[in-house]
Length: 98
Image (cartoon, rainbow, N blue to C red):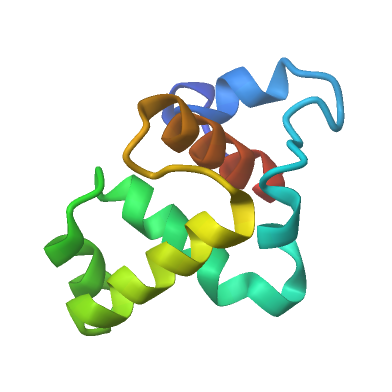
């Protein structure tokens, strides 16, 4: 059980109808075959795009992180340098947890 005040962005996501937060661009990333890429994307976004922090949290070399981010961009068609694309990806990843 979690307190409402402590669930952050999930408060907004719970107000959406089921499936409303799913996006076709993110769907391939959510397949079991790409679970590690999805985790990489979420950690990267949770770390505010800071490569050093993300690599440390994932326990990978920075070059590995950059390679994975490139794969995420190719797989989804999203540009991780674009704020709206990052927001879409982040919210879709969080919604997938619900």
